[in-house]
Image 1 (cartoon, rainbow, N blue to C red):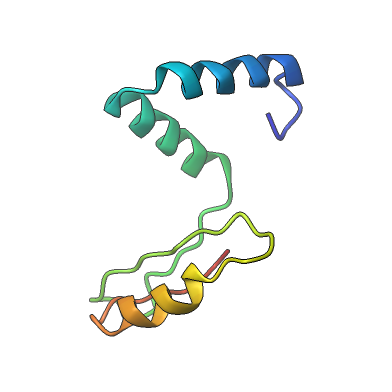
Image 2 (tube, rainbow, N blue to C red):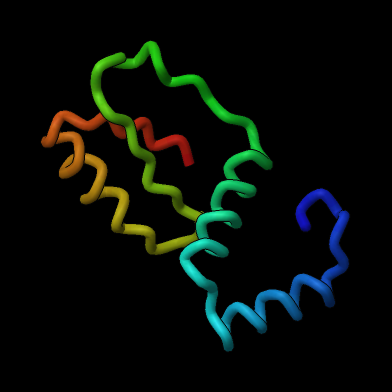
Length: 85
């Protein structure tokens, strides 16, 4: 959609269908994988190579107070939180 390959009315219809009918676990997993592959993937393997890495993504906007609490909390468990978004 962001690349301009899908018309706005098509995306609106898709979103309405997902909101009203939901998605199966397989559909949600496939969509998530497609979204991951659609952007730039950063290689974070050199940052503490033996530790797991997670990112809490934020779509922006005001009032995102979850990241301020979640990142240090997760880091306490020896998990790398690069906060890329």
